[in-house]
Length: 481
Image 1: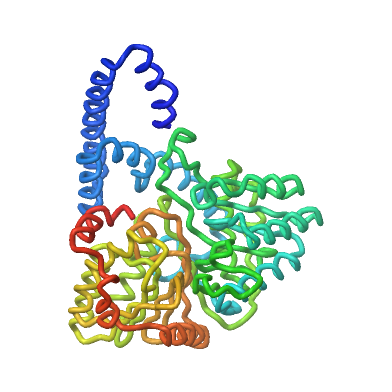
Image 2: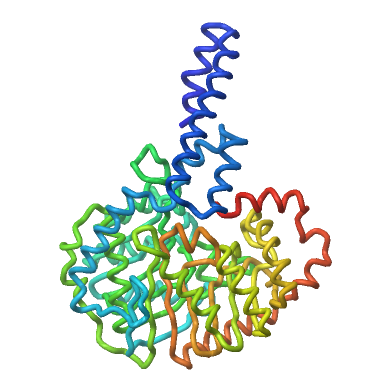
């Protein structure tokens, strides 16, 4: 927007009125930037943000106002009050319809739902996940609901859209929910194809704030695919060739997904429909039958579904992670592609490590986000000193998200161990309690470790560690990454 004003209004005026206007315009933008910076700082203070979040915005807005001010208006809101109120009303309406059929878990956490009698299946890589997703689409009898952060404009994305379009033509109800930022400028043709075939598509939250009255910072990062309201695929894999595909790819991100079949899918359906109703401007009452439906039992797995996001009071997923870290007895493994913890998680890990508990942290040696790689070393250095076993996965990008505690509990889903996932994004997680399910996830973790090197060995390479100057600068804005 700013570049458009500069190109089509400001520059022609300067040429028309002469170079003297340059001085006036330069001073005007400086003063305007300073005034807006003060207003933003006042707003950030009234929002009672986490101190690290406040100082990150303070640094950018005060010292780089021409960059910081537009960035704040696009990405500055954590829990935009008006947006959160509207989204929460939709979620509460869906909950009210479903509440008699969907009992809360005994965990005391909001927006959590635990059920026995589910079937669990691990999809260990992108090729297996793609094949299973395609098969589920082809075999769905009446309903396909898919939410994803990224829909690729590549062979993988096109193959999935072609299948969805065909099923829509077959008379199957197809609803595809895309995040506007994750799928920005990639999906116009795909959306047109699916809608023309009779499917429905909704975009979650416009990217530019001028398109809505909310913050572009609030993204739907959930990955949920539900078939016939009975089977679901969840995890961290997007519908994109970097995450999954029909053939093996040595550059594909290492990741996995989970198939869940049975009563727990009811909560995933509720989560999807609440997001869909908000994005598509529908009423949850339109989906009353679906919201009340609980699938029959399909196995012996117990799983708990937790949703987290700006429409949820408190931060239930973060609370659960804190609880696991503080209560595990012997072994804890955390696998995540990005690691920028808040102070509570960070200090909890250090305290537990000091008590002699074994903590293993597995990260990609080099992720696809350079800034997050730089930001993590402030934390890794201290965790290593505290005795945490830090392992770097070396062959390629590792995108898996998994927490394992004492062989008794595992957490999977869409969230990373960073402040954006835990406090800003809409995320969904599953807690697994059944020993056989946890064993499969532990085996996946063990295979990953075969291609890892210890932190101390990795940092011997002078090209791995960033400079202290770069590290310090990025650390200032790490709460915003």
